[in-house]
Image (cartoon, rainbow, N blue to C red; front, top):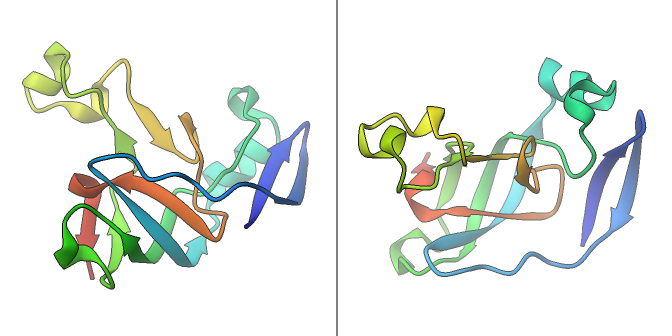
Length: 125
């Protein structure tokens, strides 16, 4: 599949492997992805980012454990919290010290044909 890759202040279009869906995650075909100032800052070198950006998207679920999600148009919460720390237990998943963040921290983003996110992070629209 095709995906955008940021590295050293450059944006490149690359052919990359299709993401593999894990249990509890959905595979989503990206229909539209927004570019915001965060993406521009990442391109300019903020956070030492290199990888696949994009955290604002609308997509269609292609595969999921919850069959009712397949074919649905969705948006998604970008924080992938650990679910086990004190912050998560107290309902503060956005502050989880081990969280990954779609297109920003350790989880490939939406500037691609496909992405994965936990099913619990999805909101049908």
